[in-house]
Length: 55
Ligand SMILES: [Zn+2]
Picture 1 (spheres, rainbow, N blue to C red):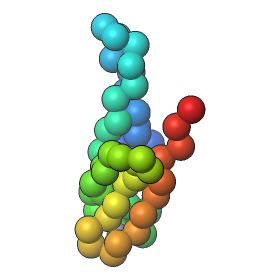
Picture 2 (cartoon, protein in one colour):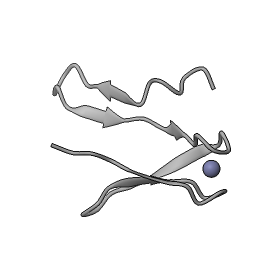
Picture 3 (tube, helix red, strand yellow):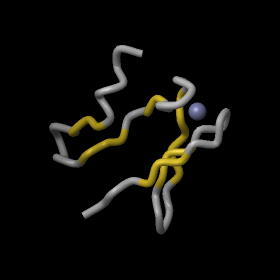
């Protein structure tokens, strides 16, 4: 639970951002990441969805 603020990690070799696991703000469980045209985090327990902003 103490890791909830660390959502991203930059790879020092490539400089690319890697997504880390995210904690559901509603139920506190691990959310799953789903890539695609609208990448998002989805909680399989309470069905909370957070869309990922990309530039
Ligand atoms: Zn949840």
